[in-house]
Image 1 (cartoon, rainbow, N blue to C red):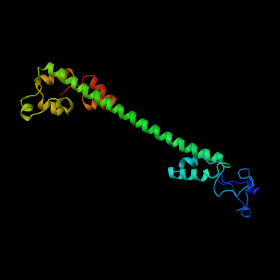
Image 2: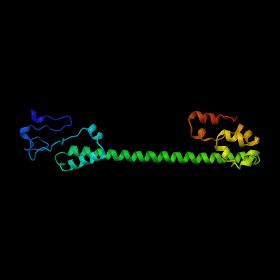
Image 3: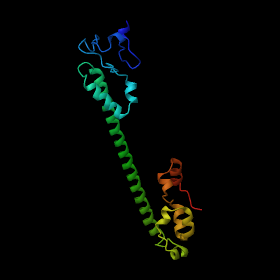
Image 4: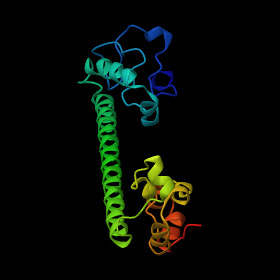
Length: 190
């Protein structure tokens, strides 16, 4: 029967002779004309393709027909809830990642400081060569800067210290597993 057909979105197809007249399907029960392009149930995949503004528009349309299109209304509400929960989960994920980065950065600073204290004790405070002292280099930058800086400004005592105690570089601390293994294996300078 032509009257019971639906289109690809699940909308009832009304024959031209019945347009504007009461809809006899169980969704309307003959009390009103069937709303144009308002299916009783929505396709879930279709709902997921809508923008937030379009979902809000669908909600406003279905709120007028809650009594007869309750399933469609509940589908739209469920989609809005799903999107809200997804957004909350994304915010929580970002917050956890930010905390992990802050914790790792704090641990790195603590390790650099620990290494610096240890090196200061091992070298009796002599960490810069003559060139480094003349240039006014901060000895702490030898622990975090590039190896070329260590070669240029470190005292022989500090270079010897680094041979047995690898520098906690950012690449070894935050880099790949391979760079961390190389750091822990005691990669030497030079």
